[in-house]
Length: 45
Image 1: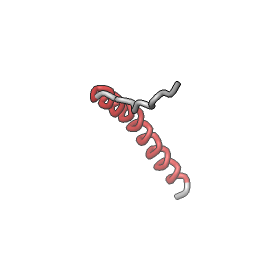
Image 2 (image 1 turned 120 degrees about the vertical axis):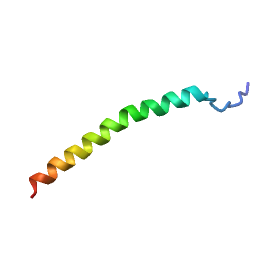
Image 3 (image 1 turned 180 degrees about the vertical axis):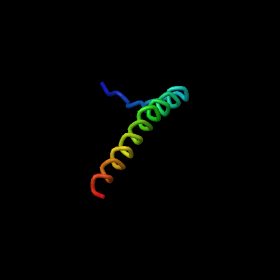
């Protein structure tokens, strides 16, 4: 038996939810990294 591979179909609503989820994760992450780098740079002054 041979099966043909079907490409994954992602709906528009799923793409929007995925982008919003990444934004909700990445914004606090970037803020935390920048805040940490700022505090660390003060140690070396």
